[in-house]
Image (cartoon, rainbow, N blue to C red; front, side):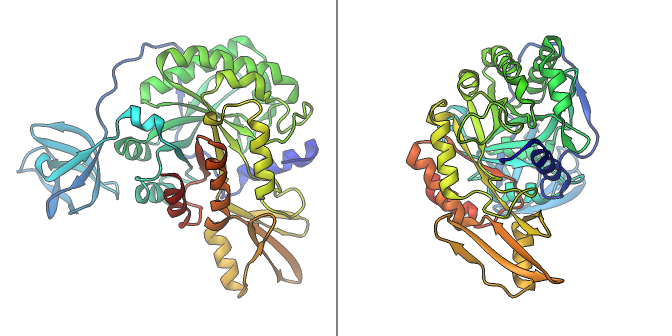
Length: 431
């Protein structure tokens, strides 16, 4: 996003308050800040496939247990534990129980192989308790998605970490060998809070508490690492933000935990920018294992209509980032949404919502030859609307940049709101 402080704030407020971008739901837990020793990871969860014609799922690990469900041959199961020749499993619809081990085949991707893969990451968000959108996509694309980033935790001004552990997608991802990164943001209420993050970053004790809380969270829950998503960071906190990443890397790397961040896209270093000025690419590069560059919102709800992520702009962002980060640290953010502008402001829409508009108004979308994105206009109640959005075709051009520049991979914002055909594009071009 470009522009002054006011328009940046408007866009950030809209980013959180729309149903499209969502946020945390349900009960939160506060993560204690005391450092902990890291233990040995269990071999579970595992990915299981029903090998027999059909299996009964029982409430106990014995043949006399009550049948509480069933699964057909080829169905995917998450194996959580085992006992006495039985697996404790979770089905795709959430049923949890026991099945005989001989009826299930297992597979888990070795972690060494996983880390060498081209990254195909998805941000997992629930707009409400047990929102199925993200989990449905994750279940259908376990062979493609190798990194899951749940939008789960936040930090307050004192450095305390709180949030919710999404156990279902976590187990599902881990069962297929995918790594899971715990996302930590600076949302307070419905906004990325500039005041909160300033107070935390500018206080050494608060930074230390945040670092220790993140470490404890990763170890206790079994995350592969952290993804820091601090937005609306005051530009004057540039040195403090760099210090935070340095301190975080010092704590996490000795435990073999990844330090990653979702960082704002930029094409030059505007140190006064309320959106990106705090992010000193060159200074933070040594402390980050991966950066998910948010190459979207080139045009945003609070600004003028235009592409969410035109190809020339995205490539320009990549070229600038390569001046500071090695290519294998850069993960390209991929938008899975669009904006509908009317009466001077925009409204975020996911792909299905955009398709509903096209059907409702009997429209034929246009293709912008230079920007490599679809768009269309329509009238409603006398108001002319412009809609710019992303689909699998526009995504394919951006995915080509990963190969062209040797980048680490792609991160889709967000699971459940994309053009379903995007996954076949990613499999074809990246796997």
